[in-house]
Length: 474
Image 1: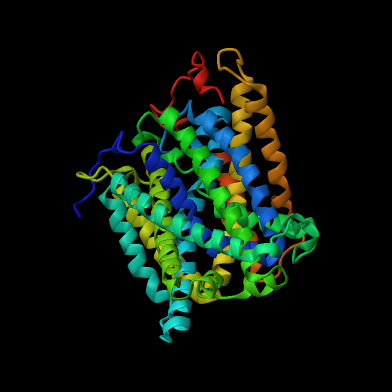
Image 2 (image 1 turned 90 degrees about the vertical axis):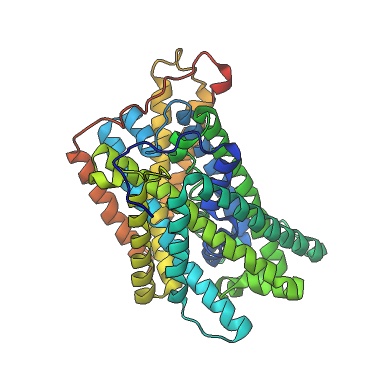
């Protein structure tokens, strides 16, 4: 790998709609999300987890409307932080940026800490070979680093392959379990009283981790400078990926209830690798296909997270909010090399330190709670930015009151519920560590925003609205 240069331009027009959709899908990591984030959701909602997933899908689509409408106007590697900055001012944008960056930087650590646990547990139970979880973290992180340095076109192409494989295999197994369930199929999954933590408290706590499973649906936005016809491609990418992944999550959460048994979901939540157990039960020796899909998903998830995180850090370096080295790109591949190296090192350190201190599953829950709080706040700020932008000079901006005001407002109201239940009642140790970390980072981001100075936005990133073109409305 050659040294990064001082160039500050990414590789423009290198990806299109398909790569963008699968970048978002692999960032969400559909199969790994089912095996990790939704597994934690089950510990709260149990057999009512499909209801929590549907609620999360609704709010994600509402947020997607707001993100997509702003993506038609602004184009920058800074993503949502730049959208908020352009609409609500420098301090608001700085606040979101200092939440968005750590959120994305923690995606790879949270994925790899759970991947290590999953790989270790699966190999031990299937082959009787005991390999510590941390032995899987470093080689996987280095593989993702290599893919990212080689270029966004290659790394998103890898995401397409990973995405098709994981979604296809797990979806077939899910349908298989539903069909095999016969008269055990039920609408009781929509009754909140069936949650393991009864009532809406359990449901909304499950929504928190369902939103974590969706986290990344908006990550096509930081690829705007590398995307063909970004103003049209990015909004479609966001909505297509969110809807596709949401339907997949609902299918899998419902099939898990039917395949495992509604009355046994507490055991499902505490199992080491319940989807591997289901694969053994329904597919026998073909369980290895599910193993292949899940490993693909974990690697693809971390790969896509690194793509998004490195672009955000790159944008900060280019704006002067981080040292200039973060804003430099590779002389051959036009990738933010130093940002990628930084992300890789951070991934390994955080995954190993937290995983060894708390255990990989507890570390996943702590990181998950923290970054979901960040995500909810960022989504709320983005919806407010959409409302603010479209209520100013409505005629020239082609404002649709339902699309640009009512739907984002509804998203904000819904998001307040899981945010509340994340803190009330206050969780016990070690779950409270995620909340404590979130409070500290949000406070630090607010102070940084208040003290912020410098450019209002990334120079040259504002794109005039296409108000005269009805295809761009909404």
